[in-house]
Length: 353
Image (cartoon, rainbow, N blue to C red; front, side, top):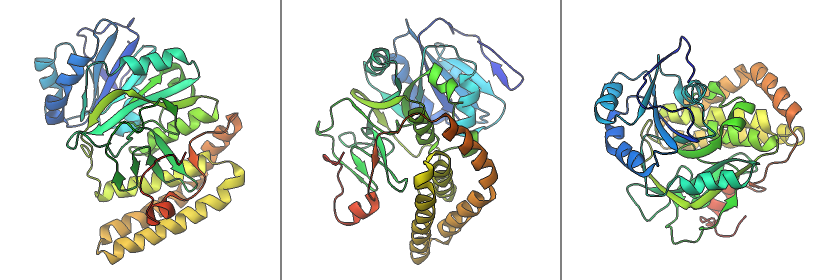
């Protein structure tokens, strides 16, 4: 395990020769880890997998609690909060394993949860990342919002899932219990190859949090890898553990990061049509917020667009590199508008793709 001046590393039971590292990024999530970490430790095979918590500069006593109550768990201390993207980039740079599973601190795992994910990666060297079926922790028979049973995007960059279209989540009745390719794997629980993560440069740290996993999966597909979902693995996600869904900060990051992602990754033939139209759609949603009395949300959409313009030079540099290395077309893009489809009453995934 390597170190540098940004890290302090504990030295409990870490073994660098294990194939899998389950890495949980924590920021002031002591209560969540006290509730959810026992299932992860109990259900993760210690003979070939390590459980590691990378702490993003917490001030709530998380590290002390982990050392006292979870001696099997390795603790990696970062000196401040680098966000989801920066925190994982720094943590994974220190961890040597064939595969990583990036796991949110508010996820409950079930027996046998990681074996199908690793088997899928073993079976296909071009598989970059794979997610399990995500069910809601508090509505256990329903899919969970942030990933459900595999992620997709529409022609304008709106994410949706097999089992969750916009605001509607489906009941899990086994209708999507097939392994299949998708566009993105959920950052709430994503198994990925160390080799691929390093090759594409990890997460874009300027995203800070939200949609960085979609951006990563898009870049992985552009260099010829696949993304998939393996429903034989099931986990339960609470969601909203860091930021509530209606948080102004979350609204800002989602709108800004979506534009950044589109600008970086879209092919030239679609870029100049898609981005302006998406910005117009964002504007329409901002006025819906205003009509609802959500002036805070309205301001965050405006701020996101201003930050997009301010960062165009940096984004253009990133775009040139990504497009210069692109060698494949991604799969899992719905060629129409998921918003229009939803407004027409078609609110389930079904056999649309």
